[in-house]
Length: 567
Ligand code: HAS
Image (tube, rainbow, N blue to C red; front, side, top):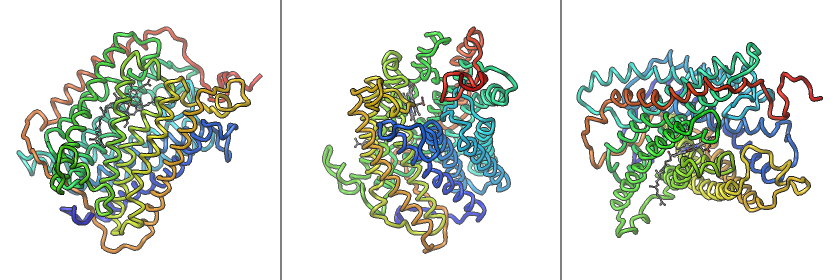
């Protein structure tokens, strides 16, 4: 992609090394995460009728799958990408602070991984009580979060010094996007830190016998939904600032990008109760308020759909595209010189379905049909495993190749990875949507029961769903394998030039100057107000509720851990 790069900069060797480790370490862990994804479909489709494979239990594998793919990989990527953007657009960062944040994140990951691998923390990525993990699991995740906060705070001095030196200029769009993502991250992680520090750690250490489950779940979802926009924002930064250039054109509207990022800050958090529509202890008024705000959080994604289509049309027409729809033929779908385009385009395509199903989930009465069914993993694979995953792995490969000065190996294979992944994910999700609409549960080792013809619980209706699931999952695994071959072949290849930091930068087509989107302050004030309105009354409800506190459980038996061995 040499032709596309407008600017390369030499960066400090320490920063280069740190970004590379932050990209390569979680990508290597992904091998484990993706292996457990494949195992999931095999268990659930009834090709495995046991609790364990190779010494790892079903829920242990599912916990690894969720924690590695959705928490560790994403957080490391966001921090590494953030450092790359800040260094590229604003200037050098403080390396001592950067290494501190790095060390905390690595130690935290290793602690959480050890806790999961020891078999004492099979609590899934949502770590809902009353399932209880080893304290090392909670402490490890806390360190990962604290490390990522320190990285974000490390960007502030660079940001303010850039603003002082560039008075009256617009902050680069990519910087606004990554700051928006990390503001959302800080907002989201405060409630989950309260849950972990004041509820889960004392409970898992045995200092308190029970935990207030409704409060813990509310604090978790106060984190859990903004979390998805923390994942999405780096992807949107790539879409807005790189995709138009890759398509051969310009970003249709700079204002739309700024509006999208800031609107997501405003509405990403006061919506968490849409994950709790079916739960007791929260009045329907607050469920309705969160459903309403959820519709508003979808607005910038509709804007993004329009802006991305318009930007691609500009590019395609510049490439000679004609006619109402004929221009679609002129996009660089499998151009090895612009291979990132495919990673972004496929993500956008998948997101059409992930987005529509999100809106179905947000509709209170429709959600009662699909909540806790396999519909949910179908929705979130079309969001986090669609646009987010594809853009993250694509950008990881891009940055690693540029920073090490190496050529991408097997470019013809690489260009097909996103398309194979898309075919896989569409088949996989269709299976899970069909099964979910018919009541197929999520998070269940169905090979022991519903998909095992020997079991009295065998459910013949879910045949099509499980076959589609396993077919799609296998195709996704194949795409991931090809990606890993390309990625590791590139890393182990010889450098052909000196490594530097390069990013693709799109010019705006409409470069509007709208003061309302040129400062974070009014949006942050609005966010604080909305959070108080949306959360103070329902949190008070969970504190007032008279549910008894819950003792700790493991996933493999119906009695609390404190009840001693099975009778
Ligand atoms: Fe979601 C559950 C609602 C977006 C992730 N979501 C989840 C869970 C995850 C997740 C992980 O209201 C499960 C959590 C768990 O374990 O229980 N979600 C929404 C809504 C949106 C949404 C309204 N979700 C996301 C994103 C995620 C994500 C983004 C990850 C990154 N979600 C829910 C609800 C639940 C839920 C409920 C709980 C349900 C329950 O019962 O538990 C919206 O933000 C979506 C807006 C998106 C759009 C799509 C715009 C389309 C674009 C593509 C354009 C394409 C082009 C290309 C231009 C409106 C931008 C054209 C090319 C061609 C070839 C035509």
